[in-house]
Length: 459
Ligand code: ARG
Image 1 (cartoon, rainbow, N blue to C red):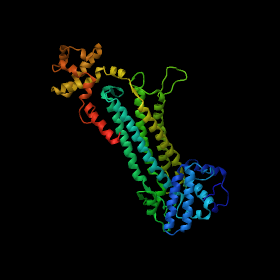
Image 2: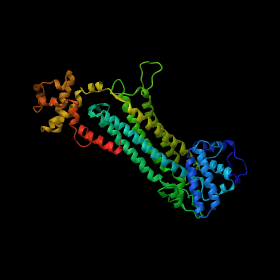
Image 3: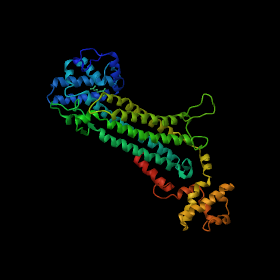
Image 4: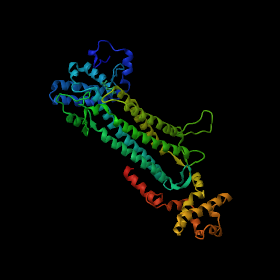
């Protein structure tokens, strides 16, 4: 059983219920490698500052390295009865090297230790997330490139609006994902500060060298206020907020794909290998992966709320409530990693139902704005042009006719400026080609954007 780091002052043994209730070892053991790296840097610093002898430092660092190797290879057995990862490692070190281990905790508290461990964990995980987002971006980009001529109806209010290139729609995803990456990279700037040496809350009277520890651990700066170092978790909230925004994006992409894969839309086929069936309805092919991606967004937002509410009433500085920041943080990071990974795979195998999509493009209401702009180019005011086309669309709908079926005489009834050549623009390819304003869906612009993204993502 791991020895408590604080037992001596206590006149009674702790209640086993209390031990179980307060322990965090079941979830903070995943911070072990950072805890060990922090301890090694700390021990080296204590030696450099002549606070501990070179012999003790050698034993401590050697022992910690051995423990690290054991943990890395899965040979280390965590003590389920330990209060936390810090106590567990401290105790294991004592069992390995004896009394010199007792000097490791000099000028240190578990309060600054846990702050260090999570910051190190996050530096690594956030970089991993950024890389995974890039993998998803590449997968979406490749899907866009494979289908760069496909035009789909675009929607507003989930009502048919105007034609867009499928690639243009997909490049919109890349834009949001790029901002998600930037937010995470930016969050790293604030994570990247070394809190060790803040001790419990006020710093220490011992001659430590925080800069040295910072350099050993590869941090950019040292935290500037010992109270702040042990009591704020805004950097966790920031990552969770970034992941919440990211998960909104992922959920919306999933929703698009779910809609597009329905019989009603029938734009795409999600590969069988990413669908499930029904135990009762033999015909079903359900997009469960995408539905779960949508669903997981809720859990991630819950994790953010969880930590926000956890923090809001805490007096400075450290309070044990802070222990509970880790399960939601770990859950969000694990979940987002899974979602990013599987969504990148799903995109690899989506097939376009070209015929069904082409049929949807026969709906001439998709071109009504093009006709409005045709009239504007002939000198008619925007308002009048809108009215003219509005009347024409209404009559066509009432009579079940297509604009393209109107004779020149019929067209001229709506406006003398409407001539037979207007029919030339009533097709999807012309419609997208007309959208040449920067950021628009014209094939030329989309080609440029595809190139830009290929370069940027190195794909
Ligand atoms: N398990 C604790 C946490 O996650 C570690 C710090 C405990 N500090 C203390 N003084 N009890 O926050």
